Image 1 (cartoon, one colour):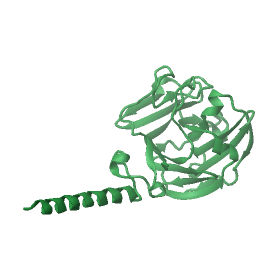
Image 2 (cartoon, rainbow, N blue to C red; image 1 turned 180 degrees about the horizontal axis):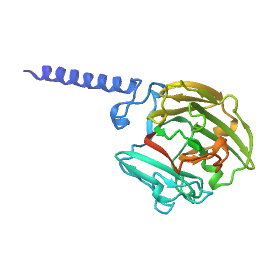
Image 3 (cartoon, one colour; image 1 turned 90 degrees about the horizontal axis):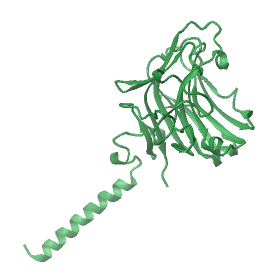
Image 4 (cartoon, rainbow, N blue to C red; image 1 turned 60 degrees about the vertical axis):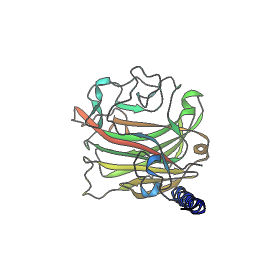
Length: 279
């Protein structure tokens, strides 16, 4: 074979490789190596995975500081009993137990001294979990701004990806708040609830999600959109860390136990993921 033929074959190979590369760069879904083999849901099809924990182990700080995925408790209150946070067979269990203090077992992506954190502005947030739908249960997956912890910002937002009430278990609550000087000055209550079909069993695993884009949040259940609201301007100025918890509080009254017979209330988490659109 002459050198001219070799050159033409080499050029053809280069063209094929270039075409493959260009095709890969222009697909709607990220390439598998970008997301560790995890396929994004359709509502986040052009997003990349920026945080993921499937709880085959637990990257939980022992003392609330240092570089970890998770920290025990909210920075302004005491941590929950360490024995109430466990991982087994790839499932994280957050257990509230009677007489514990505080009245929730929560983990967050913000260290207790606010020096370390995973935080985001905008994205698709999703959690696959199940929970004990009993009186007093108040499961919560939510977001708060780092700025409120490390700068004492007097104006801050709150994005509740999902909250449940054991006394009305088939209602999906998703809420945004604006806080000023620790006062809830506005929220979307009255427009923040969706009644799930009675056939939905929340003691089984389901996916709870929220898509936050500039100016808007849309809530999802099992990858189906439920409702949307416009956000307040403060949301576009802050970076938000994630909280997952098994709280106790009848009718949104933290620590209220009237008629509560459960001695233990579990929230089991299969995985937590955060997707973002890359520049």
